[in-house]
Length: 103
Ligand code: FES
Image 1: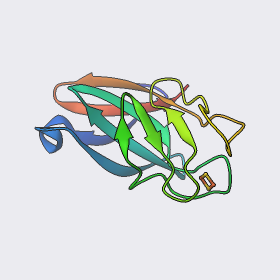
Image 2: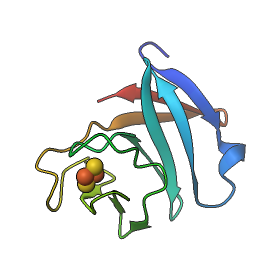
Image 3: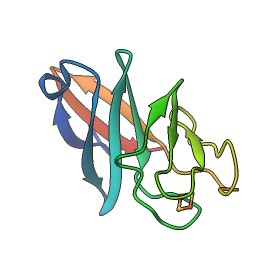
Image 4: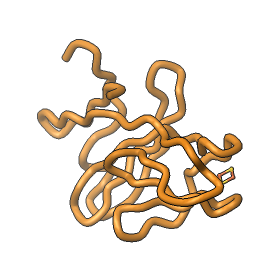
């Protein structure tokens, strides 16, 4: 799968959850929410805080530092203090393996 990196197995996500992975030396947060996978850069665009432990609700993750919200599907910044979105990753699943490529 050219351009994609193997980062996890589906068996690690039997229920909703999250996993920190590295893609091309960049920290990425792989999330399973309501049965769907999302992958976003694990760095808040406001001031660099990892989003790893941020609360997730309605397909949005909240930065634990100053409260910026990002859309899990598009990476778009949804409220201040963030004004720029964060990169998202394309996800391919094959034979139970989860592969990521930056969009
Ligand atoms: S570092 Fe994320 S909102 Fe400020």
